[in-house]
Every structure is written in C-alpha cells, then in structure tokens.
Length: 288
Length: 228
Image (cartoon, rainbow over the protein chains, first blue to last red):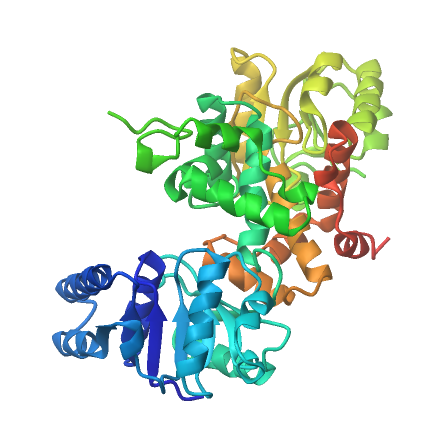
C-alpha cells in the first residue's frame, strides 16, 4: 500500500498528534479544523514539539526542516481531493461526523480511504453517510494519546469494509513502528472496553468517597499489579467526566450490561465539579 | 506430602497445594502440607501460614477444623474469600494475605486483624523475604483483596471479547500493552494466574454480592475447566 498524502480533520489533541506522527513518516499532511485559527495554533504547537525534539537530540535539524515542510493547514474546501487517506478526529458527535464524511465523499477521489478516530461510535453506522463504493474504503483507525508516542492503532473493520484495505493498513503501520491490531466493530473496541473494569472494580472496592482507600488501592495496583498508575490517580489525570462519559457510552452500547455499569461515585464527582487534576480536585486534592 | 526443609522454619507449617504459584519456592524453606495433612497433623507449630485456595465457606470450615488441632496463630490466604467475614468468625486468624494471584512485581497484599500486632507483621515480613516477595499492607480487607478482584474482571472481559471474536488473543494482549501500558496482556496474565483461580474468585464475588457484573465469560469457563 502506498500512502503519500494524508488529510487530518480536527486539530484538537488527537488530530494534532496524528498529524504530527504522519508528518514524521515523511508524508504530506494537511490539517483541517472548522476553526482555522485554532488549526494554525495546533500547527505552531507541532512545530514547537519538533524544535524540542531537535533540542533533545531526538531529531536532526534536517529532519525537522522536512517534517515542518510536510505539514500544512488547509480549509476543508482547499484539501487535496486525491489524498490517499482522510482521518477524522473531531468531537464525538455522530451527526457532525456523518455530515463531514458525506461532504467529503462528494469531493474526494473514489480511491481515498476514509477513517475515523472515534473511540465510541460504530464504524458501520458512520459509513452509512457515504456511497456504497466508499463503504469498502471506510474503516476505523483509533490512535491513543499521545499519538506520537503510544504505539497502538486499533484498526476497525465495519461490516462493509474491504478486509484487504485493513490488512494492508495494518502492515503499513507495523512497518512504521506502530502496533496495529485488527478488531471488529464493537463498542469500545479493544482497549476502551477491556480497561473499563480497571476503574469500575476499583470504584466498587472503594464504595464511597474515602481518600485513604483511594491511596491504598492505587498503591496496590502499582506495586502488586505493576500498573504505572493506580485507577484513581489515572481517572484524575484523564478527567473523571471523560472517564464517566466513556463508561456510560460503553454501558449503553451494550444495552445496560452490568459489567459496564458506571458507579454512583463517578456521577457524584462529576456533579460536584471534582473532575480531577484539571479542576484542582478529584479523588485527590491538587490545590496547594 | 513432606519435604526436607532446608532452613530454620521448623516451627512453621505452610498449607498449600502443588498448584499454588509459589509452591516450588515454599517447599524449599517450609514444612508444606496439604489441607488434609494439615488437619490430621499432630506436630506442634508456633505459626501456621495457610495458603490454601478455598472460597469463603470451605475456608471457614477448614480453619475451624484446623483450630481443633492447634492453638497456633494463623495467617491465612483469603484471596478467594470475603475476608472480613472470615476474620470475624475465625479468631485464630491474625492476618490475611493474598499470594494466590501471580504478581508481575513479585508482591502480595496483606492485612492485619490488629494493626498494632507487630509480631504477626514480623512473621509476614520474614515469610515475604524468604520467598523473595514484597509485601504491601492495607487496612481495608473487603472482598477478595484489591488486585485479584480487579485483574480478574479485566481478564474476564478479555475472554468475553475473545468469545465474541472481537479480536485475536494476540491482538488483545498487544492492544492493552501498547494502548494503555499494561505490564502484561490480559490473556497472558490470566494464564499466569490460572483461569480456575479467576473463575473461582468471580464466582465468589457473584455469590456474595449477587451482582450480575461478576458473571463468568463462557469462553473463560470453557478454558478454565478444560483440564478437569
């Protein structure tokens, strides 16, 4: 498979990371956001990241020059219609995603592969917004944050995805230091589903708001389980609202399956505005 | 099943079966007995370290039988038990440990009945040192310890996913290691712990809580009992 040009839709944290990673693979990358100024700021942040990597001796000056040249910010109506791959990484709103894919379907080459970085929506459902022909070239490519560092890419086949496309993409990613794993189109895919009970079970062990218990459980999971962070400190880092939202989404998508049921404590924390590090308070207090 | 003990732990009896993950280490240092041997033993010990893999009810009955033959203090592995219940009704148990589930860091949880009981804590420290393990104390014993119940749920979900053909076992392991930095993939983790231990723990949680979240994946059940 040859990929020369990639369009990344959405210049938030994930879009920015994905765009940077592709630029570092020596591909031409066009980054798009509905807010053009925001996309320019993201481009600036990527440039700063390249400069830091150069200063740390991880990239050469010639690499940085090439990578910066590979990246540009475009408006949606100015992207290369013959790009090999389009990756959508916008907010988790199914209607907005479907509209973007529908619009792109009318302007992009029939050979362009469409991919979504969604962590929660069905690829098959999203592909209903494009033509029958395009559905074969439509799949999920789920990156993990930070996309430049985390190796995993979940490659998700929708019901009508041509398996040869996903197989070729897996090979392509694996040749470029990523670990691409094929999975079927099921809520949460692999990671967001299996990781749910790292948090869910810890919440049930804690039962109520009790910082002593949170510390105890975190310590055990790090020092006995070998996890880099305990569940409560990790929820504080991710954002308790974000974690609760993913749990709730998987729970609903599995038709209220008890294994995924969110815990009352998560809901209470969100209601109280204790969202974790970003608000200064979560399961732990970060205010000095 | 008696073994020649190579160190000075003659005053300690360890109860464990050959399928315990630390068995090979244990028999090098301790008088290791099976459950049946332990309740029929006429030897006198100062301390009994019970590492039998029993669920709450059977553990309680075993400890009750053991109490008829000895006045020794007992440190008991309550990985598959409702620990608080056992402590309440088995007064000879001075502390609980959780050694049954493989730990990638070679560590185990323990909890003292009385947090000021320094002698029992010293016994646990000596035991941990002897078998080359670290020990992590906590005060909230609860159900089936923290690490075992959490990892059991993660492994169970991986088997649900496997049963639904969400991805291959290799892909599941790779995804969890490379997407969220797990030290082991859940399938390989489950194999190291032993799927029968995972199944027993979840069944115990299900029995005690009556919560459907602890139902076993059919795939895990199939794999766990395939050698029986």
